[in-house]
Image (cartoon, rainbow, N blue to C red; front, side, top):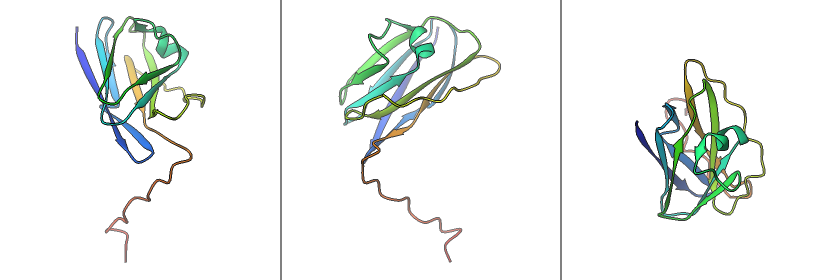
Length: 129
């Protein structure tokens, strides 16, 4: 049985997960660890159904510097999506379905605070004239 650690990385108004894709087998464990900012792990009902212990809701709060560990109880072929968002963002939005071929795949999508003032990315030197 394999163990995976997903680091939830924060930037202003955003969260990313590294790694963001895990091909797993039944019995594997995954630990979600928040960096210096509170985060929420948003789950679909299909994703929550394969986690043990079963989360009490589809929104799992992870405090800054804390972690939560789940055992993956099923490995039926398919995509099991989740999303990480800032701790002050509700998981009320819909998470897109994620098709997967050839195995069971946990996909952790990035998320952002829709009200945050997120700076634009720097210009690409290849396309800037």
